Image (cartoon, rainbow, N blue to C red; front, side, top):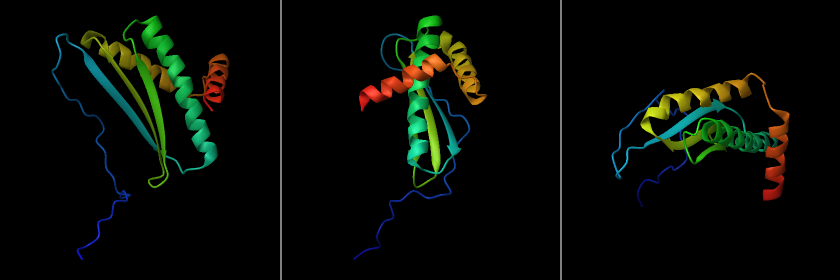
Amino acid sequence: MGKEKNFLPQHNVTRPGEVKHNVYKGKEELSSIRMKWIIKEQYSQNEEAIADVLREYLNIILIENIRMKLGNTYSIYSSTNLDILLGELSLGISFSCDPNKVDESIAEIIKDINAIDSGNINLDILSKAKKSLQKSI
């Protein structure tokens, strides 16, 4: 028998700060944006619930600001993942838009993330996010 493979992730994972790739397909020019933030966070059911509410809250904020207010995209969504093995919480945001609207969209998203990070939470939207999660259970 050969040496067994270890499929568990290693804890010394390194990630680049920023990666940009140009991919050309289709007939019209469109930028596909994927943003990700990663912080150290130990897993607990409470932290997972907070991450779920954060994801729903961000989905509402991003649709209002990037889609409705700016008109820069049709579809935008956020995702969260609390990795038990690595002890990390990741937040991802994905959307597509006109290449001329990328910088404006990213600036608005960073503004929204910074507002949440500084504790500037819209309680009405937070309530909508919680209700949305309760309906999905």
